[in-house]
Image (cartoon, each protein chain N blue to C red):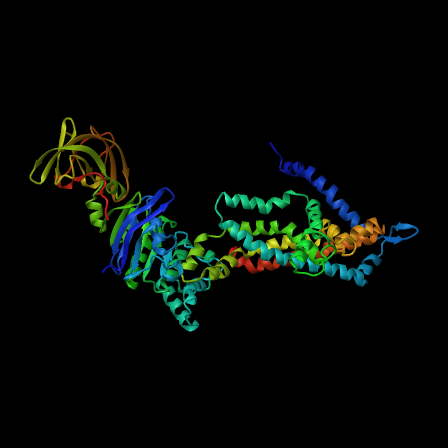
Length: 354
Length: 284
């Protein structure tokens, strides 16, 4: 049985529905991200799991216990807040020790346990400092230590890395993942950053407009998006609206312009479809070759790859090309764009889970 | 091009005003306090410390100073006890109630202290509504003496000064991250423990600076003690007034005023230092 079960969670604020019939099962020790744009209901979902918002409908079950009506301070869930929410008037030690104190842990045991957790987040030497004397990354670790010290059944992370610099954020991602693996706590991460979700999670639950739209492992969510929304939210995609005009075994014929028909792998979700082509699946070939002619309008060098903006008869496309060490195709060059039929994704309207 | 001196010239009018209406009178009061006074010959210029010695030696003045600071302490404590929860509750309200009640709290500041105090005088009378209610319900047998009593002055001063406390705590609450309260709850603290261990320590600087404002304003309050306390319940400010206008002993009045000023300044400076030392490390 799943460790955490969200059953038909719904939250309405007046006339607006923030979260609608959301169901999600999370296994013990699993790291799941709720990913979506702001206002998609991911934070409200987290608040309902934490007990800060009461669901309008639905249940929250942890380890077989229904905690829907349990007050937040009796749930025993560890939370890392977006602002870290460290107690500014307490030292690092006092911050981390607070949760144990509330549980009535004896002083000697408390000291040992706090020391252990601070070592885990590499802050052993900072116990006597006040939060404002620490850097953002260090404050973030204190927040993590404070949440973990109570041995929570469940760890909730609310955009924990969004306030950090890009460089520190990457380091913290790796560290956060390592710590979560070490302690093995079932973890829910809320984020709007698709790279963060992909880097950290075992599974990604993509949300849009209060609903779950796709739940899968990062690789599959990225490679096989089930909707236009997911394909656009995780990574970039060139989208072509079209109509299925023929079917040949596994292969579809999709008309994307009066004079252009592309092949795509089936089955078709309907008559009207969208073809999605990831920039890194496209290749630039010599003019006159490939499936589509184009002109390089602009290019950006990003170190490990180039991004080309290519004007084609079907609009402006993004093509990404790995940096192989050679000077890339210059701006203004006439090129052809090509791809493999199996790299094309055929998407229908939004699919809703649960 | 503006010369580097321009800012000084531009601030000259304000400086002149400040010197004319604040520093000069203060200096003249200080000088006056060293003059002597004779019943038949009036004020005698000179330099003597006899006024100060009188203030410092006479039990009559000791009592007045003790009463003044006793009232200040009581008013400050009551303002803390009333104003802090008031600000917290106000801060937790949602609009439009929040704005409405903030206006209600600050509203009294829009009315003259004299008018408000006269209102209290009406309520406090022997036959006033408060006594009628208390005797009517049977809580007291004889009407309470609220006019010309320390209790009455304290109640009215609390009413006058509690908005300052609310505003000061309110300002501190704006800096409080509401997520810290949630963090406390998530770690298993009760609502009360969150208030005591997490909210209160964070707004303490606001409570302390509010106390300072209330204390200083009470110690130098004139209108309220003069209307509700009159001659029978003198505080320092009303004593100074009486020396000037009834006894006509201006030098003695000036000396009392200077002693009050110095005492207040001492209290404020040492209290401020205490706050700074206590909170510098934590809140920076």
